[in-house]
Image (cartoon, rainbow, N blue to C red; front, top):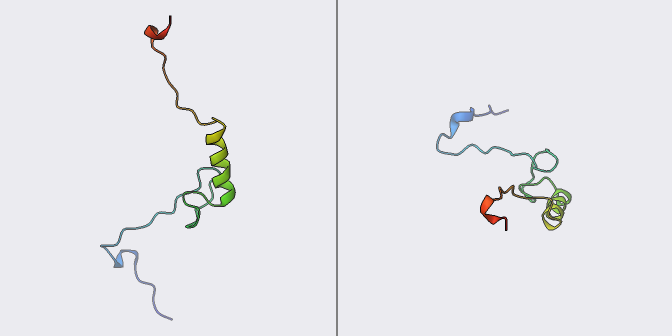
Length: 65
């Protein structure tokens, strides 16, 4: 059985970090990046479409009439 090369055997090659799914936290899959499945993609889309994601805004005093 061949020996496994050390991690730094390819110094010019960038190390890939597997990120976790932003919905459920499991590792992301290549087909559904950055999510782990089509289900989590659909959950995220539903949150966008139902205005669950909001950017907090500070109302200026000048805006009140």
